[in-house]
Image (cartoon, rainbow, N blue to C red; front, side, top):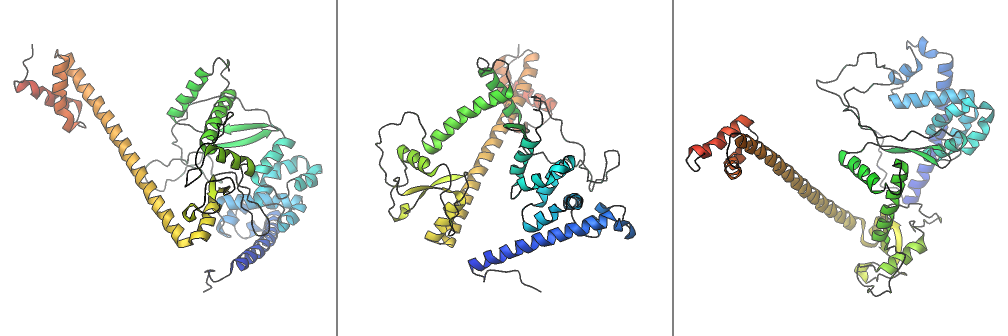
Length: 416
């Protein structure tokens, strides 16, 4: 059996081998698309006993549903526009790009070559922007609405809402909550879709009210932009000490403390981007999450000065630390930090549970007090009697009231 352990390979060999494998995979993918297109075109799947190309890919090729749909869609487009085969083989287009471009290639076949060239070596996000620029869509209506609890089981790609769906186990099968996303609609126009909690909804409405003198119509897009302006200002102040009126430098530049004026200068010099540069001269393009890194480490006496600081993304900050202190040492440090973070989260969760339990107990105590007040007892009497129910807070209300009434039966208080 072939071993897939590659720890014996040198770094440069790993990178060279990976590049060769990627190139080979692209060529293989293009050839696979050509075969799928031909089998689909002459309906050979029927000869093999399958009702559709999709079913053939699932049962014979053992693709996942998503993988089958994507490859069949790409193969059909490439069959109509053969330049797609070459673009995939050369690495100029990935499968996701082909699927995203498909409806627009079919809509304007006379501009297919131009669109394929424009999409060369672009990511999904960049292709979304390209499509929005060339095929703009109208703005979405602004609205906030309550979402019902998901009760419908997920449907596969070859099932319909009318067909019965067998549940693999008793009980309700809930759909995954959709992730928040932004989608380009047209040049300089984006649609935002998200699901928010009740507290986030309340904060949004409160922000609308606070900004009503500036955004009279309460337009959510305008309100959100104003809120983001305020948030960015506060976050930049906290992370980079950004300010319109910098004070005269007076903080020391020793230890891990970084003076505000040093943060501002480093940020301006590095342009809000990771400064790591590879051996072949490529600068890291990451803009998040950025961290201030001491070139000469603090542990080795490095000062917190402009010349000794730089912006690095978290990956390259840790990469540099591993080279300076050793991979095993940093791995231990990360495990320790992870343990501390887990303990902190556990403490916060325990605190939240305790607060929720206390609130629930308070509500259930109030229920008993209300019942006793309706029977004619004074407020102080009802409170003292309800205290007897703290140990059975989860019992039915009738049982708790009976327990509370024993306070009076014992003769501690004589009801009027």
